[in-house]
Length: 309
Image 1 (cartoon, rainbow, N blue to C red):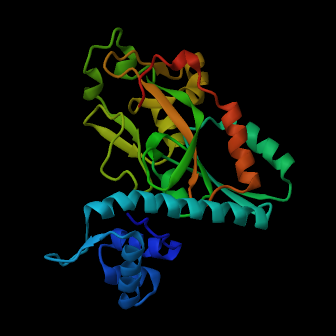
Image 2 (cartoon, helix red, strand yellow):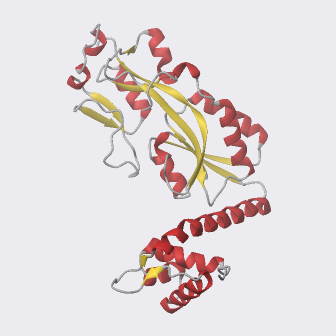
């Protein structure tokens, strides 16, 4: 029984390009190769491995064989491993970054952010920082398209292909309203009462979460792309909505906002992750930022009883 040969990285990239684009011609365009070169590369790969990777009969588009499907996951692992190796070596060769683009979820507590960035300025005086503050899926979108090298994202990055992440703690999200809002005057608040009043909802500037809603209870909504504006409108009694607890703690103390005890909408935990593209790992300064945030933002064990949102 003969052993399979050793395929080249180029052959594996051709194979993956065909799978990802859906045709030999599209793979050629993606790799800037002639279709004949793509076909020759796959033929050589099949000869090296001793298996047929694509069905050749009865189909206009390349369809993976059983062997092809088995090889696919391994081929992706090899390609991603090589990409990661090259990216890390590039970082070593390039040394310290000249600038770092950081995208931060608007829910992330400003005090935590300020403490770390002040330390960053002292540690890396030659590195310029570009700070982008966005909501929901916009953080993931910015990291994926390369606008930001690292992101402090809410939970929407989970399961996104091509990203690596590290846990960065969480904040409690609580439903609040002004004291003169009808919900603020109810004690107790009956189940379903929130549906009768306008809910202020933070919207996503990106298209990453288009058509999706999170923790929306009322059919009557005002959509805002700015958390500060939502905070101001809540204080004016225009509606009710969820807010990160650190941002409205002073309001709860002064009485300008009231925490709503809603039996069917108690709030929950908004979890953060530090994210970066697998093929573009953070350099020394960006990695320092992630390490500091990870050390600082441990999960508050007192919040574990609340459900995730």
